[in-house]
Image (cartoon, rainbow, N blue to C red):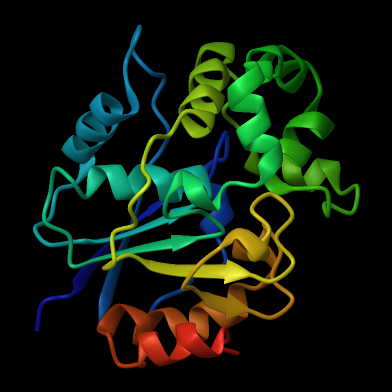
Length: 232
């Protein structure tokens, strides 16, 4: 039996190093990692997503995206047939955004953010991973490799202005109950990881390693898990 290709997309400004602890059974799955590209001038998120699909070299892959990467893989799924789309610490529509992001869109305050993120790794870490970073900045600097201002300008704008309002019911959403970037109270129909923060791809990797295979294969009852709001 051929292995199932699984493509991983990191979060905003993050490198593929965030997946270094994620391990899937090698007899069933083959793991591939997508890197952020610098956006082209005036490139829309839809256009960027289409361009990123050229990096997919397998038919019917599984797409897994973290945070902004979760938004991106949902857009990519509009251009290729995907076996499954799984998002982690992300959102399915802009209706799951916290109020501060809605205010940022209305006031266009997001345009003031990128320069400070480029200049200050602590600010970038908090913006990308949330406040619960425990001041381990040397560690997080390793994971935040995309510091180009053109990328940050573009990425922050694409998140804030994302216009999807209807969720794709086929998207599988895994979310931590302590996520402070996308608080759980705004999230609908997801598998909740108890104690999971916005960086649970790093510190809840054991849970993910134990459960991702069955989630990909479709063996758990996802509707039941979502209704119970837990899978731990």
